[in-house]
Image (cartoon, rainbow, N blue to C red; front, side, top):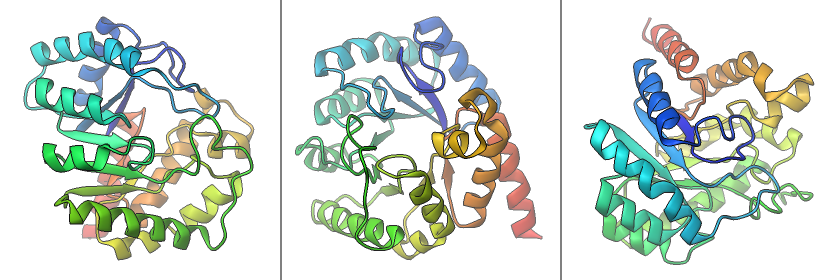
Length: 260
């Protein structure tokens, strides 16, 4: 899953692809480098970031998807949004294939019912708090993997009651988690195999790498690849990344090892 941050303020590439021509070029590059899914978001979720209004999110996405619909066919696009109204419009009007919700329905009470009606795959991510406050002293009452598994069990039960079965889980590295929490989560990542749903991991150039190694996001590709490789060995099915070529290579190497 290649990341396209269509924002001016994302933590790594904010503003780099925040115009239509650059965004279309980056989509082409990611597809050429092996992306199976392109994940597009108009709202930065970096710690402390403000929440874009519904109107602003729609106005930011609409021109981009208008051009995408003219330039790309048979490509799986995922939309990174927590708003049911946005999900509904862009699935119905532009054929978006997947909704990727960082809040797992916590930020919009209509999202679960909307996903059930839309009948598209739905990514639920664990986040403690909101992007504005999630890093303000996050705490867990039990082992982090067990607490997040319980969170997913509750959400999955609610979704299945509504008839939603095509669910992908994302433990939410960096979202309401300290540096230590992130590595505890990575260490126990295979625990999520018990849920028996596809597991998405997104660690690309995040602070769990940068802070530990005392480097900038621009220097974090090697660390990202190391953690992606560990995640693949522990059962990750989808890697959400900025650097598609390197992630594709890691996937090929791990596949070869597992099939040998």
